[in-house]
Image (cartoon, rainbow, N blue to C red; front, side):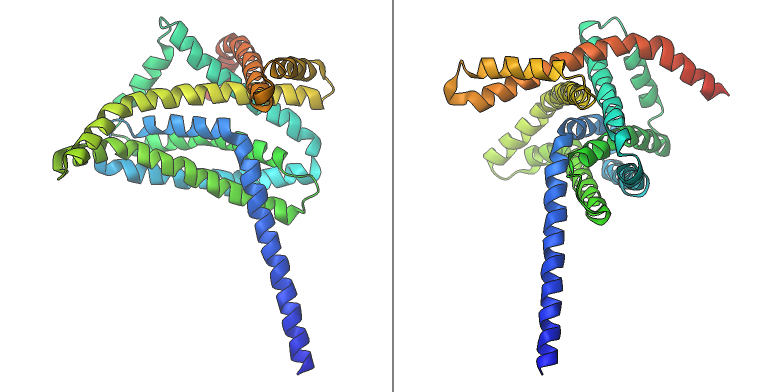
Length: 319
């Protein structure tokens, strides 16, 4: 009997350790994935355009296909690469993170550039070309998954960099997997709601029994175009801010401390002007200055991408 009780005690102890490990994995995953907010918002802002031009009944199946591709990108391809980096080449994580940050800066600045310089219709022409091929569902899904791969690589790298360095490889793998699943469900769940919101609004406005229901439906239909514009603006701002912050922190880790120190000196000085909201002011000023750095770097990268990287990539593509 005493042996059985000892065995039960051992089982209970193992269960407690396992439960603590699960809690640790989930907690680390949630905490780390929040650092990837800019790329996550951008992912949610970019994806709805890939279902534009399809019949309403195909929208959710397309979102599901892209979501499956996104999970495959994160769990099957990027997670093992992240574990290899953390185990054998942790020194490579800050440069790779900065590369992803530079891409965020470039993409955000390019969107700003097309707003302030509407004469450049290159992006618009590419978008119209995609719409012309709207009947080729698989082609558009494949394009969305390729775009997702870049954003997922940024998300997983940012998440990996936010995890504590003393985690075991199994906890790191678990945290990355949970973070990848949480982010994918959040992004594509939000995308599914966005692309079906206008249909829901039309249904409510047409078949609602109460006047309030019909009014809410009409408000949803009228408000969705504005909401999508706001989502793109927020996504662009988040890309620029997060990208700039990654660059500043990366330079700090590599020994170039002055940009990081200068931004925090300015933010600290500004926070003293409003003692009751010091934390909020310091965060806002830091984010704004990180955004200035990101926007400046992004504008510098636009001609580099257009006149150097794109032609070189084109040469390799033809070969």
